[in-house]
Length: 287
Image (cartoon, rainbow, N blue to C red; front, side, top):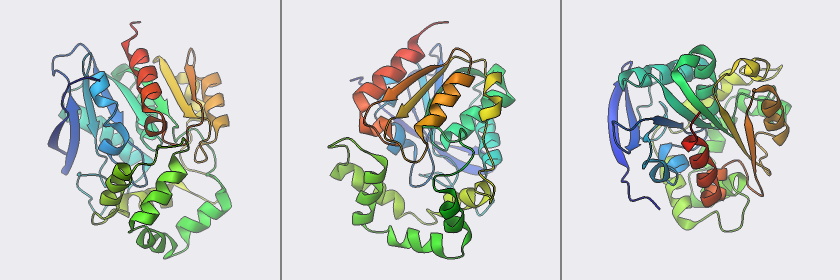
C-alpha cells in the first residue's frame, strides 16, 4: 500500500464550490481524474482505496460532482449534458489540458462524453460498470414510474435515512462476502444525512429516464473513441447488465474488457485488491 496522503481541496467551477481529493505530485508526468457515480456516492466512497495506489506514478484528482459529497448542491437542473460540461470546466480550472479519465456508473457519462467531445484531452479511459452504455434502465417501465410519480422518490429517500437502509443499499451494490463493513455503512449513512442529498440524483434520473428509454446512450458512437480503453465490470451487476459491457468492448477499437468475478455494481469496493491491480497496470502501460 502506498503511503501517499489524500488531500482535500475546494475550487469554484462556474460559480459552484467544488470539493475534490488529490494525491501525488503536481508535476507528475501524467494526470488521472476519477469520477464517482450517482445515487448515494462521492469521491471518497468510490475512490479512496484506489487513489493512494495510483499516486506514486500519477497526479490523481477525484472531484465530488455538484450535488454530491462536499461540493455545493445548487438548486439547478442536473443532466448528463450538465455533468459533461462541468467536467470540462473543472479540468480547465485546474489547468489540466490532458488526462486519463476513469468513471464509475454515472461518472462514465462524464468520461465518455468528454472523450467524444474533446478526444485531444483524453489519454486513456477506464469505464467501470459505466452508465451511458444502455438504451433502457433496469426494469424500465417500473423505473419510469418510480421517477415520474410525484412523491415516490422523496418517500424512498426519507426511508433511507437510517443505518438499516444504508446497509441494505450497500448489499444491493456489493456481492462478495465481507464487502459490506460497518465502516462502509457509516460512510454511506453520513452521506445520506447531508442536506439535499437527493436533489441532484433525482433530477438527473427525471431527465434521463423517458418513456422510450434513457436519454443518454453512447453505444452507437463508441467506434469514434480513439483513446486506449479499459472496461471493468462486475459479473453480478444488476444496475448495468453485463451485455452492455460486452457490446461496448466490441465497439471500442482495441479496448480491453476485465470481468470482476462475483462483484456487483461497485467492484472497486467488492474486490479492492484485484480492482486496484487491474486499473493500476492499465494506467501504467506506455503507448
